[in-house]
Image (cartoon, rainbow, N blue to C red; front, side, top):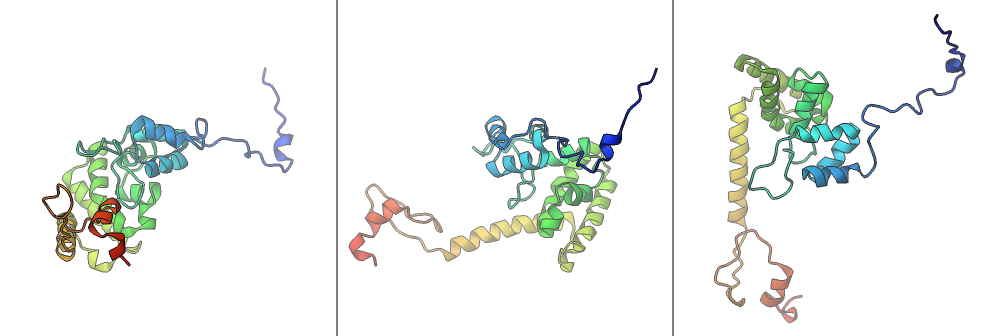
Length: 227
């Protein structure tokens, strides 16, 4: 015998969803990110981002994230897609495994929204996105190449300069490496060497570009000599 159901209360004009919890809300708290930091060794901005965007699902995202390289003391886990933003590699795997992401554009535009925030940063993140999705979805080299071309074209519609419309993966990686080396060399060439031979026990000058610590400035530049 079926039981009758009176749905009149659902049509009385009051909000019926104000107390309905969304996915990820059940284990969420405003201080949850602190537990993520202590448990996984995530950077604080990454932990806050994951907690705010994924709720209690942030634990799964963090668990899917790769450890940092062994030379890094902190953070211990979570490789950023871009140094300027808190999106990490675990979000790529989570998007594929749980959110049906099937293309690099799905991840960069429809899951992390990085392409809306910074098209150039999205381009720099593209090699990692494609490589990670390839591991998850078993892409062929032809599919990876197609993903590259389609995503770069998409990024031009999001503000990527037209002179980068035809950039290849190798060109991007070489440009990134070359830019880093050039920036270091330029900084070293422009910054004067500050000798500290008059400091007790000092035998070598400071490395170019490094500021003199306040305590040492007291020794190098007596207060009477400073304006």
